[in-house]
Every structure is written in C-alpha cells, then in structure tokens.
Length: 144
Image 1: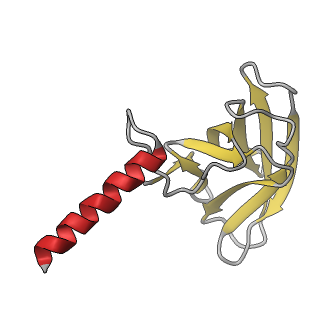
Image 2: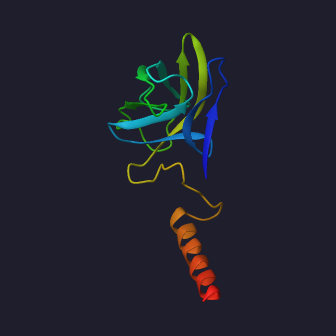
C-alpha cells in the first residue's frame, strides 16, 4: 500500500511518493524523488535532500522542479556513492514555504522501491509474494 507524507500549504496539498512513510531511492546515479501536488502546473518547487544519521558521503543539495500538467514533480540525484540503509531528509518548498517533508532511505539497486511494495513483518518480500500467490490459487480453486 502506498503512503504519502505532506504538509498542507495555503496554496494546496503536496505529497511525496513514499513507501511506509519513507521516500525510497535506489543506490544509483539517477535516483528519482517525486511527488504530487495541487499547485498550478508550471509552479517551481525546490526539493532539498540532506543526509542524516551516519550516512556517508554527507550531502546537502537543492534541485528545482517544475510542476507538470499532471500535477507531479520529480528530481534526480546521484545516490550511487551511498549504501543501502543510508538515510536522508526531503523537504519540498515553494514561495518560501515548506509544503512537504519526509524521511528517506537508500535501498539496493536491485530492490523494489515501488509505492505498492508491502513488507510482511517476519517474512521477506519474496516469501510474502509466494504466500499471496498461493492464497490466490486456493481462492481460485474454491470458486471453480
């Protein structure tokens, strides 16, 4: 189930795309941080990414994104020098006001970061997917 984190702004609601309330990015050169907003298309938002915790190398970057016609925004950042588990914060600002904030985490390049990712406590993602698949097969057999 996807989760989003946002701070209501006078101009509208802005939300970052998160998984379990955390922005997740791959440890790659062109990792994307994205979100949705009801700000007008063409509005510029500044996305600030700042390392937190024991993250190495440390970073603090700000990138400007323009809200698209579909009311989404996105920036890319090079996380290839970061390790899975490194943490960072994300702040989205426009017109001098913070409109969204969230914590972030770097994941391995081969791990899913989809907003639909679901982790079942005590089980790995693969085990959870197998269990769901078997449950669907069992339900399908009962229907026949």
